[in-house]
Image (tube, rainbow, N blue to C red):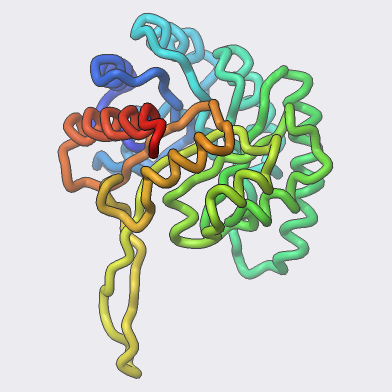
Length: 279
């Protein structure tokens, strides 16, 4: 589980809940977040570790995971690839925790020339790969809507030629429903050795209004794993057929069920899918 999706729990509560629900590991969210007095996925998330002062917190992070009998599957960082100082700190923290993998964000679309953003990110990621090698870890870019890396095809263009032992891709079934969807098996084959990590969530498209010309307005909304557009069973079948045997991290941002219930249900659901050899 990625702790972006467990905002109600403290880190200590999170590892206890995940261990009790049968999880194998935890992906810590690390970022300096807004704290406006509310609790939510992106602000006031109680299971988030701040980037400021992270180094002092590493022993506690490691102890919590170890004492719960979990593994640290990755660090979910928010530093952009051009923020070299923060990326360096995340790479070092990942090595210290034995997490092996850390997410490094790529530029968001911001009105600047896409080719210019892309070319600059290529140079930054070459630097990231070099620094990841120094620390003995792997930096991951996530397929994410409204960024320069929304599809497997764009990710391959971004990383092609860099060492796949030091940089890789997080394939995210939910994000791709918003932008960048490609056939699962083809995308996995295209990424080849760069397929390094998997995030699972789901999305439903719903009509949310009408424009002045009478045409429908559709919005993507996070949905429970069974209720979204993505066929999660087919996703696991494609991963199995491809031979993927790495981490699968859940990050359900729907709220139809209380957090503890959806955590238990999601883990049971994906475990059944992973074990379904006929799926």
